[in-house]
Image (cartoon, rainbow over all chains, first blue to last red; front, side):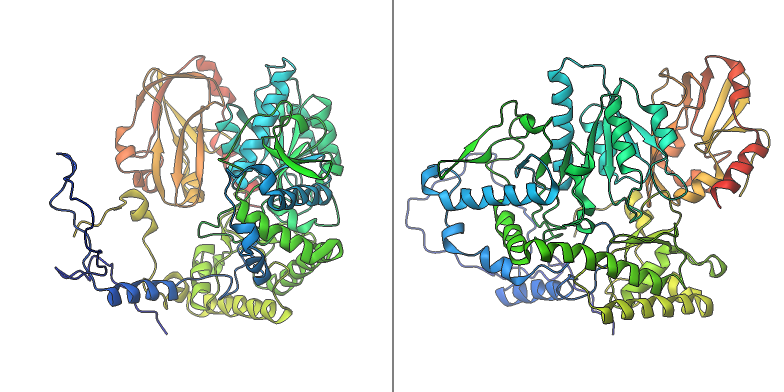
Length: 478
Length: 129
């Protein structure tokens, strides 16, 4: 059944209707200074009931992990346990102010300290700062730390960041933001970093290399130790993009593999809300060499007391106050509820689910690289014989009530569909999704137009993305 | 895939044509096909010099953003203002109306470093494997 389109609230406007009443004025009226008033403001005028219905209708059209399957690759859209929300509303932890004297918020500081310690243990790093507000912010933090490290040694000729061609787009963006030039390293036929190409670029102008492991093809980087060795040998540092950490929990530790710095995505791996403004949280872990450069403050413990302190050669503050504290409550709750064995099982089940789904889907959509995958896998989403592109398959998935996988990424795979089921989906859900993919492949052979004109059940049909990008209309003009 | 027999090519899917002392430059039919609908073009200013392999501008499509790379070292002498307002001509006519800029090569002998139409076709075929 098709969802009804909802008019804009401006279109519902009727002059004189109000959804609010102001209390009577009990102070002397004061006029606004000249030039600060407008006669025409063009605000919608609706009643309270119309207002409530409008936003309730919009909320009912919302799509979320609480309502549907969400196999959006590289985003780890896993279930956010309700116990997290319970912990995040405990009064003693929430009724605090960031400017309170530290001795009066010892419980909150202890929780932050324990979260730092837990993330250190999980990742094998020497220290963790909880400051960054999200993944890309964590990357920016890590690259600033790399820059500060080289600068502290007077090593100013390093301007080149090495980035594999399978990297998240934020990696080159972060490097450019930090003033470095980007050198792309190709992948080999098994989807690993091409070691020979890497070694050709390793010289004394290298800042470091940014590596995602497992990479965005969902494959474990088989040469990770050699990559770290080659980059370290030329004086560079290893940045770990922790977006895909879900596949490694309790199995391998980035700090042990040779990474110098890495960000965590609490909103992916550690079940804090993802999307819709989260907010995210992207703590950064550092090995011994980069430890002194962590952004501050971090929480330290001395004689049973917790206090905030800036690391020795800290790059400074990256966020107002102490980071997205509400997310620390949720992530810490998740880590303690799961425990070490539970976290290892998260990784094992995420990898098992992805491999099972891969086996179910590949009869209909071919694999980009035929290897056992980690927590996600990438297929070619097009059906050339039917003239159907990955985008058409994705749009048709919406008709079946499934959020499309990540489209056209990684860029090195043509018509990529990147599928990440996460560990929280059942065997039945995976089979149901595979059956939908089978039906769509069959429809493509029988009636390709059905796919090319999808979706058919949404309030608006196929959007003209090209026109929207070329001639965006961003304001309501009445 | 369309190909211009008079042009030479780069591994990053740009074409170059000699037109007097200036060389005309654009992206190939294969490149526009892979990018799909192009929605934004960023071109350099006239008079700007670029080294071979340097990013001189960028294209953005509904799918991806991609750098434009300088095929040989040279200085920009003319840019196609029409593609900025109607980027769709790059999709519809990449070798003619969709040209991006004209530049003066530092060393005209660099022509020989570019791929011939046959070599470029072979490159696209091997990438499609």
